[in-house]
Image (cartoon, rainbow, N blue to C red; front, top):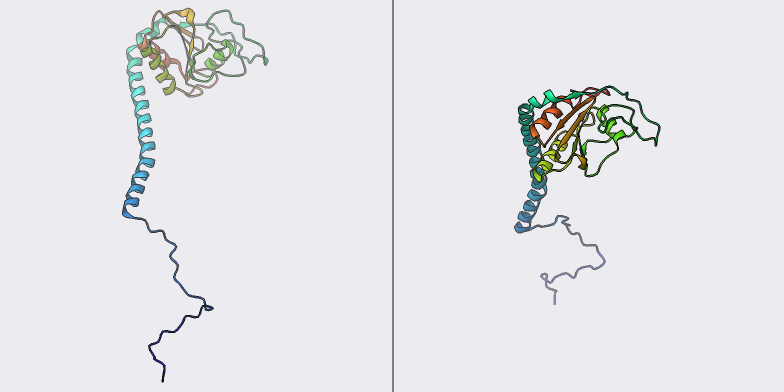
Length: 212
């Protein structure tokens, strides 16, 4: 009897089978939506943080400029000091100055960077900061608002040659002593416009290199 033509042929197990391989990963619609939300968060949060920082800097700059203009009368009380030189001291040698808040003189080879300091700093490094064109504010007792104001201004003016340095000096009480190269202004109390006016008038104008 002849064999049926419809009989299935047995596969040859020794013959390699050709298959189309799909290397793509099938992602459900729900997973794609989750991925998009994650991407928005990962990209959006840094952008929001950057926008917030830029806005804070802009707002701090605007309020500083307003304060500086309104406090210009305080500049009539600025005292000019004698020039005691600007040489570097030998490494390890402390600076010796004839006044409590020196505005010139031989100074440390290390410079005090702009910023808000919670501890007193060596006078020899402060003088070096003044030579670079920074303005220094010595402060005693500060309210929380006053502290935040000065911290904003040190962040606003943080340039190496035109920055603001704030250092504590408890002997001042509620008074504030401002210093620039060969300039002093003593305020009997915290006066934001007067402080801003002094900073704006003298920062960036030290003998090292004037940048303003």
